Image (cartoon, rainbow, N blue to C red; front, side, top):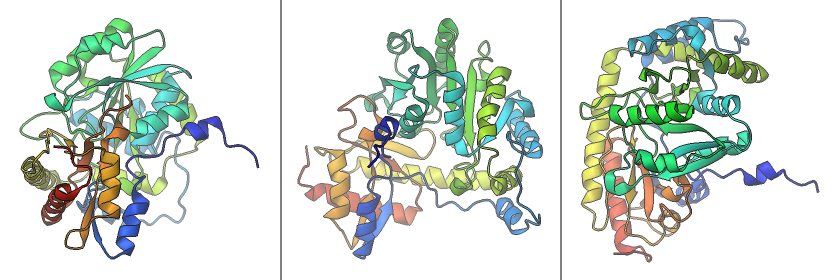
Length: 399
């Protein structure tokens, strides 16, 4: 039998999805599983987006421009301009989700063997994109004790070597929910400018900032306009994860023209998805106000509930809808499997994402999990109660 490729063998499995078979088996046994493991909101998609799908009247679903429909790009550029990001529609490409935007950025800006520095824990799929592009993620560790703030610039600079070509952040952060401040971004700007690096900024959660905090985009940073590359997506902003529409945004014309060649190779981004994405830009402000209030309520309840459980520590995230939580367990991977396989409380259980998969440094995150507060309050309440009961009886509990 022919051999599988080395790259295929090196491709990491998703730590977010690897426990799915255990959750499916729990459901087959009739248990209710509360999914805290994945960022799939239960928030309704905006009506303007659904109406665009219902009222679709074209007789042919055809290819679009490889960069995306011009009408969508122009309208999306207007959205960014309203956020203080000074770009034109030719400064962006529509991509197949934010994932493709990251992959295009890696393949456009980096050679095989080049390195990207990023704070850990980080979005686990960056590892998969790095493997696909043949580049290396170099982690610099942030700590739960200081709520996963940006590591000291001196620690980042220590990681810079001859193959370092970029620094990458996710702001607000997945998996930690940390919101990088303007001061932190200015420090990154200085180091990017000093070493002439790219700054990749994954900003798909830009709409989710709490406690009167504001989002500071990498696209605001003066002096590195040619270095800054932003990735975006409709998935979380409009609760449209299945639409698979994102964007790659930069004022660097050479990056855009080069990325377009990769875009041409895959022909075009999803046609129906672009129609929905373009319509979503007309979402009324009250939609976001209601979503904001809902997530604030969920976050506040969940953080309080977790910190009341003996041995648990949960930081209070300032953005997105995730947090990384420290549990009194020997091994979070074992616990996450055990709670699905061997535990039930009132015929229900929970699914969490072990945080070890969000770290690159071996051994880190061993007693941490990522929790997504994407469920309504009643479900969150039941999930927190179930988690508390599980921790009382888990055989590998560590106090």
